[in-house]
Length: 614
Picture 1 (cartoon, rainbow, N blue to C red):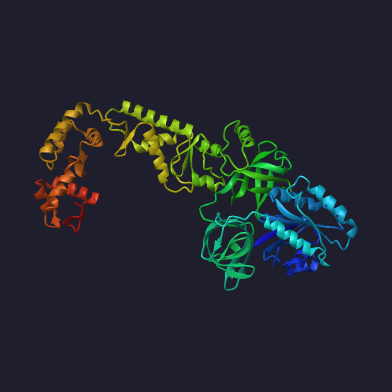
Picture 2: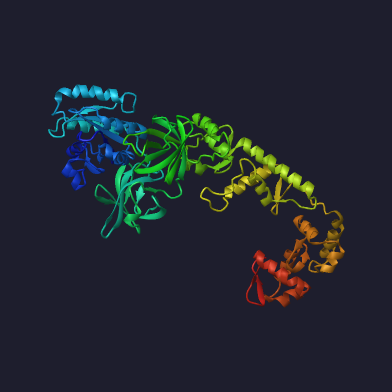
């Protein structure tokens, strides 16, 4: 299905034209039919002679209903711009033209209606329209002269419309979903139904989606789908679609909400934009109404000159780079300006001069986004996060961007800075603490998080530390010429300087080599000058192993114990283990608990264990 939205001044025959083309009444409300005035969005569809399915979104033309008009045109890929021959170009014609320009709609057809009422003015109106559309995406759009009353020109209109739609690029059915809701209502026995224009992605029955609304964001499930009043299992773009949602009260969803693919869209309430048309963004107006899709959200403007600004939204929306916005003054019925989103994750501006620096940066940024700038500002960023921003990551990365860990893009100069910082931190720490076997990996990570920019440690959703981030830390440590041994970062071959404690450690090693289960008593350790600190250093160096209750053995002792315990009848008691090892309860109990923790033995009950790994 193709979707076309109407546009044009009030009482120029938009609804009459839709009615003539589809045989359906687009005005849904009795008041609209009584007054002959479209107030809200209307919907109708037909099948063209070529077999192409076509749906119309009919919009109001009166200036009081500009917000409704924007909700109808916002998601539409093609527009049918209507001007009456007997009235010519008028005020709302200009407003609708400006809205189309601001929304970036480039495909359309111009229809001069009421040709039967003023045939003598058709040529003049056509010339007038061409002049008004000069320099816009619709300046070369075909013009068709019709009469919705007599049927004149309708066949030509259908042919031209078919040709325009045939030349429109097909949307991606595999793209992430963003369906802007234009209606929400309840059906007895079915529950809540929302409708909208699907322009990308595919909807499926039983699909899990995320609803982003005015007051809350929640998970929802698709109970059923309809397109053209028929139930379907799936809907691909472009199409008008009705979505029946499970367990969602109709009062919880309104026009301007969006159904999105979970976890794929950033929900943002601050964006940096570039003016695409209209008034200067530094004109002094600080409060505007932002329109995108069917949403209308108040926004505060922080200008960065005439062409760039930061918009702070009253509520978060699923937005991406290249999104087109219409900005309207709340007290006005006209389009104030159009804008294109340049950044959906802009940096905080806290220092003097940040605004001027940001203005300069935005001035040089392409409208499709700047991968190098995004990566350089963060130091490192997940590839999927940039894709979520709406950026296209090229196959050949910019010169200063590397991917040392799959899924992470890193700024090369920042990576070198992190490598130097890690090397200097470990070197300085070991010089100050010669007794240590290395620097804890966690301490190195904390040091890198204090760098500028800091090393990222968590996923964009705020979840636990991402595995790729940990892998990135390992890349930095390796790049610094360091190694990680038992959670300690150190230069290769580094050994702790035990100093005066070296002789005591060597004596314990000698005794344990002779009898691995004769752990020295606390008094023996004190006499050998081995306190808690010295023992910790020796353990970090891999020379001793501390068990519970102050028991110190060789790192080889657990494996030696396993060889003897495996020869016992299974299961065995603590007493049988003590006798087999020739040791005391002081040693055997923490040793068995250590083997349990390693998964080498398993406790059967309060007195017995068995070997589970040999």
